[in-house]
Length: 313
Image (cartoon, rainbow, N blue to C red):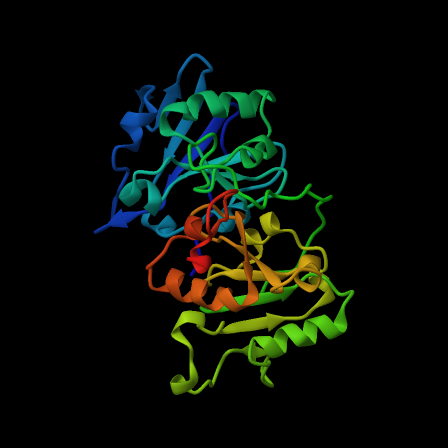
């Protein structure tokens, strides 16, 4: 799957890209009414801040995800710091638009309340608000200043960004090693996940009669490459190729080899790109299965202080 390049935006202008279509028609649901503003052709002028929101639609962007956006935006001085998406959660879930970071950590995303879009964009463009502020203050649903509670595992301090290669393209899950200080711990983790085969997969060719439905095995392509050492969750979405619908990316970080249960940091690629959930390694297979069949949403796996986790019930 490939997507057409997005056009340049004028100073003070932000692109709002429709990524959901039916019979070739762009679906905005009630978003444009909720955003408000004054319409001038394909532009909405929002509030007193004068932010210009340019509406972008075309079937070529159908099913575009936040992590795919940075590669489609022309670089240079005119590159915008953020792009907004009207995606499936907006159209069918009533969620706020997804803002995609193009400056600090390209590809990560945060949702914002539709009615506050103009205010938030004006603050971002004017320097009064940074994308990191949005990330730090989003709730478990990925919504900035929402009411879903704060994650029990807040994002760590963002390291200085450096380039990483693209991750492999797969329709399954990826298990990516990002810490290389504990070789024995790494091999123990792979053994707990059923062992890696000669093609670098864990969880394949298992006997269906021996699978525990309550602890479904993780089927994932293993990425054991020092090129990904220190990879941070927010950097992951932009590294996932768009050709296939990768279920999730699980990171084996330093905490994986230091804490009970060998927890993996799982990264959302779709609803709120870059958001993370930390689960014992034995539970990630069930998470992947539930996400793939649409039985659960990513936010249901994000732990919240004082709340029992889904696997503990």
